[in-house]
Image 1 (tube, rainbow, N blue to C red):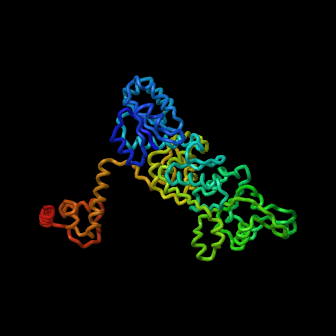
Image 2: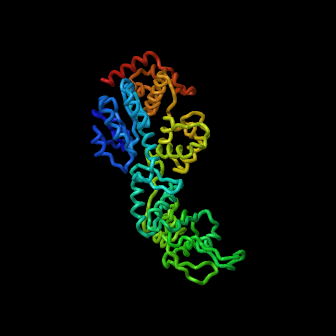
Image 3: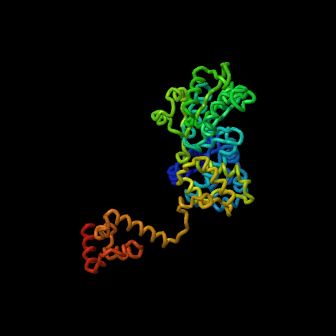
Length: 463
């Protein structure tokens, strides 16, 4: 969300920022701000100080105090000489730009300001859920939908199944559901079904009595019983062995357990949330997961969006991680260079949020400058933010155009030359200068006569 505060908005800037994906609200006065800006939604904000008169600057202060708007100021050089303008920028803005400024630079600063605003009070933001030091941060539509779903399912006792790739934050979702449920004051017990040896899983889930097996010197309460009254989170449920699947199904049907070595049925009241990155539909077809258990677990389903589908959230999350772990480095890291932002958006993030956290934490320690670059994230190959002269840029573009024409016409030089609007001799010469000629090829060098003929062909073709 972006709020553009200007007495006379720049229509070309509005169009350019909309093309970059900003959902824009335009306000022209402090009264407009009070009316149109929601107090529970985070915004990036542009305040164009050059479009207000000097006498109006003082009246802008109440609007700039909005806690969930990250303001970036635009100002002419003359306006920056005025004490009131400097005070407003210093007190209320994350940054400023002298006019004229490019839309790409404004977009970058807005993304940073928006990210910083979401760090202010994540529970106040519609779409943030926090537990302790772990937060779910997101403003894209898929995350907003996830937050809405969390609020809906939290008020029921039905079993919830969370599907998603590794590293997307399935346990955070489970904790968020528990913290917003009537069971929030009771235990939240998590068990990773894939991290416990199969022969111990039964006793971990349901506990055992003294003497149940060698080494059982005293009674042990299992995880299911420990969660009585609260929430039981079964992570990586797809790794549960068939034997334990049958025991879990019996508990879900009856609401009772028996400790290993015991004969007493114990009633347990828990809300079950399960999660896995495994394709359970495929596992059921292969006979590795019971269909009846799946239908018991999957009364309500939540799909965690992968990081690569979360758009600007990638940058927001990166700023969040930087803010949280910046003390890992003695150097004062101020933010991310444009090359890092570009690389993060181009990279596919197979490890999702967990991978982003690891890469940013490493970059905080290893970066040598005050801005983290793509190379610090080990993502240099995903950026084109490399300095080159105009001559180098032209040469690269020329080479790409020749390569494309040769591919389109299967290296038939006459046709490729006509397509490019040059002679066959010129094409042959350019191919040599760009290293596109095959040294082993037996083709003779085009003659000047060929050049004339090709030029004639190109003219007639153009006509």
